[in-house]
Image 1 (tube, helix red, strand yellow):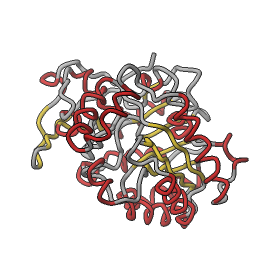
Image 2: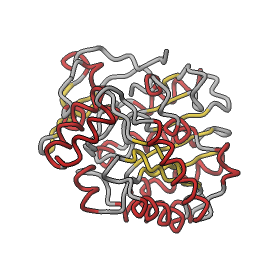
Image 3: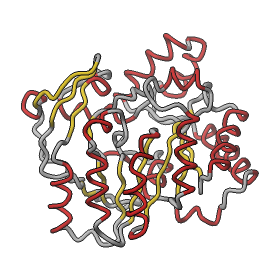
Length: 330
């Protein structure tokens, strides 16, 4: 079982109000640990870091909504409206690294919340922790984000890349701006993510694209998948991974009503896929496997590099394994 931050279970006991912005509340969350151990031998990373708990992007499919339940917050919208800021994260990380033999263990940043969500512009927790990591050598680090804000930290990423093995994973499920705004209301536009990817790749930082999740009936059309694959390659992505939508109960409580309200003609198919299971039928995964294999070959992604997949990307790609994210509580 993963070691999680020393956080008390109730919001009233874990946080002090920092501020509000519109309908979003920010709360300070005291932590003694920010580097969380992933003990599962199935995982390709051994440590996780999540600077925030909750995410303002509000992606309707987000699996990580369950992490707010550890704080007794069970309204699915709390995940995007009540953001917990681990203000002393950099100090905690520096202290932990001074006494924790990380060695060449893989560290995944952003397993349960986006480290470059809008709150990062103000609080700079991710940047402060990257500075700590940049002082060391020989680390294996992956960062996963939907945000172009990561380019702000190009100076620190370059320093980190000189001394350690780093990769940045950009989550991108569609190029359709109208669909993206509905599915990911406050996330960065697709073209800006690709522009950020190109900038980082041009600076010598290995970048990948995660087409995760592929949503049945919404983002799985071959032409849509091909457009993302083609754009990823053109922007300089080293590799691309995919994963079909899976729905934990906490995520389903947000996603299923959303589908019924916004895409009612799709509701019966989603119910058939996910009514009794968090995962889609095996035949659907096999269909996507064939599609992505063909398109990755067409656009020249190097299959010989598959075994060198970045820590976070590998884990997400294997999401059909039960309990995968039990070790990334945030």
